[in-house]
Length: 287
View (tube, rainbow, N blue to C red):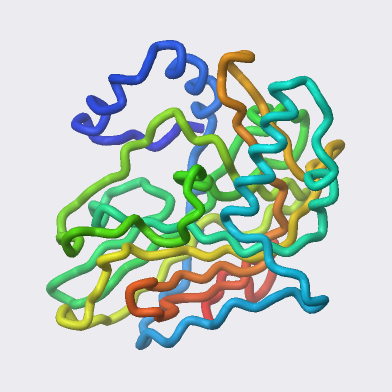
């Protein structure tokens, strides 16, 4: 699979990275791609208030973005140290999570952008278009053999626990801005089950008057589900394709349940989908 390309201007930024990092990460990322989207439903409706966060039925707290990143760091340290994963990591399967993925922080994407998470606004029709796609990896990228194609989401900026885009000093302008794709992705939530959930493409189109459009904080995808198990392994697997000098790249096994896109600036839910198994009736259908 071929990783989405970026514009020449953005490649110039990435050229400053060291040759060792580029060579180490290229082997891992070359097979990555967004899953080709199947025909997707369209939402055309007013926005509505976002649902409040909920705790697990037993009173336990949902694992959030910061928690997941912390567990991945523990697993990465264990790999780099040659030791066993700590008990906290081994006990993850079955725990529920709610992962926030801020996107479009720099503004709208071009109409032909390949970014898996993106939004753009059409001034003429006053419509906001939101697109979310799963990433697909080859099994051997995670050190696996003869398994179903893993699918999931990169956790961008995993060093930050913030669940929204960084504060803007100005409103995002209506210009095409693709994110710079660097060989530095280090954390992913991945479905390793035999029947990957979701069919790759989720899209919503909403009519929003220009004077009511507030995207100063970008948008946010929230993915919920349970921590799963990697076949033949535990909940987290880390790899170092370029050797011990490379920062480990980690995958947390996930059983995805629901995908929600909301606007943190207005606290409105824009779309909601149940992520079902491929071909399952009702999968990829917004509320």
